[in-house]
Length: 480
Image (cartoon, rainbow, N blue to C red; front, side):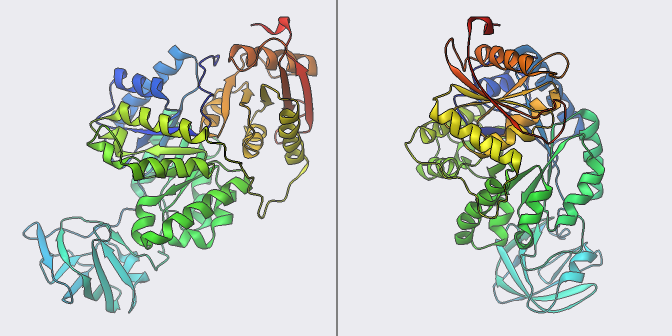
């Protein structure tokens, strides 16, 4: 698989969710052509057969265009919901009383089933309970192992199976439900490149998922629970990438707290060299409108200014009336924001460099000083290329690898143009220079006489080593 589509002009990557509005070949191809780098399959919606069909179409397109396409399966996570009501819904008046019970009952204005014993284990007097994405707020006055008597702080109409959030509690439950484990097995057998883990609360959640996933896919952890913020550095270190999932995070935290937390998560991920995605409601109005609000455009641009690796579309591309237009708009906003003459700062807080990091930092400095056309990185696992992306250089990064799975996973990383080089692994410096030069020319990054900075690990084929830096000039023999 070569990679000759000139998509490297935009450094911040775009993730788009597939769904009812984007399930046929023509629409998915149009989404790719409009700039999507990673396609998200949402296990919370649709059937496994639906996702398998979308996966098949994506791999067909990948073969046609000769460019790696990453596919991410987003697991639903343990969804906590109330039971059903006798009349389908009930009005809960402010300052009234309402009881949550473990036993199965027909709900009414006085009580409803909460079929999650683990929640009652985490509830005590004073616990705040949010229902229906925070539209209804309860405060627990008395609780036991199978009930919670509450006062209605913010009232409203509550209907069947609405969601439940406990913002102040760390729940004694795994981030992987029985459904998630089934979806995970399906996704891994399908061959997805990334798995998104929902409702992560603690490092142990990541370790549990890693034991199941192994090296069959990379793990992206979604930060959407306040409890995760307490152990954020360790969670980031154990993950392959992080998503700032502002939907549930915005439900469980005051809205005014979310922007600062978003910046803190992005900064930490950049310091530790983990790709970070900003997601949820970025162009929400484009679900029904062909244009976004000015505030939404500013939201996307802010993520770009903060140097997030990727921005994501959810309902806009999955269920909206304008999926392709939403991608095109996001592409335009990102490119415009990246063109602004703003200085990019590395976020080195808490970062302890090693030899490989020093070599990669030097590559960026040398490439800037010599006005190199690109930085070429040789990688097996992707770590060398991710180190280069962490430096946020002004020139494109060519991620050369002999492994399909690595090339696909690298499509998520900022500024990286993944390039699969067919054939055996590199064995010597001469072959390294030849392949890198030819790939840079083929990708349209470099031309005759341009300088190219190359980093790699020597001896070749050794995982986790980046200890070599070369500067070469593109010669006539570099033409593919």
